[in-house]
Length: 199
Image (tube, rainbow, N blue to C red):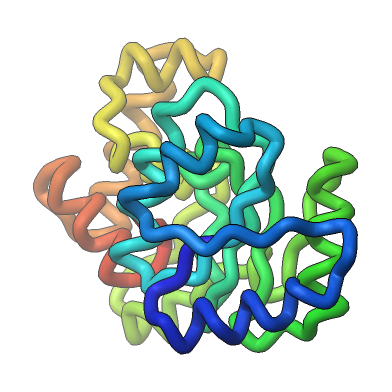
């Protein structure tokens, strides 16, 4: 378990300790790789603020095998990105999840299931995040914007999605127009600021 503060770490550890089937190890993000090397069947619980969460998931994404990651977040919307899924995120719960909910998520992810707080499936509306400045992106456009944030070229986007480069160019142009962006980089920046995607 990796937490953003000692207080959060102590609270989550106290939630998990009564469960006899679990062995809990509290880790700093820098020590996480060592814990995974010692036990590659570990379930990772991350209770980190967004910037540290993104950096930790990025590091996990480079590992060949992570059984499952459970994220505890005060705002679950937008946590389950394509990058997070590739890093092994299989559960997203609110920070105030009960001990029973967290224990159930651990059991479920170990069984290969995905556990999500209902809000994790929704994204902030443009009215909330951009005050109505733009037209809403389609789910496909959000998916492409997430991949653009990862630096994928149009050719790689097309190959990954199984569509033509021409279709990708059409989607990218639509994203730029809807966000009022002049470049892919600006589109990604605006997408993050408006809560459409997270890095």
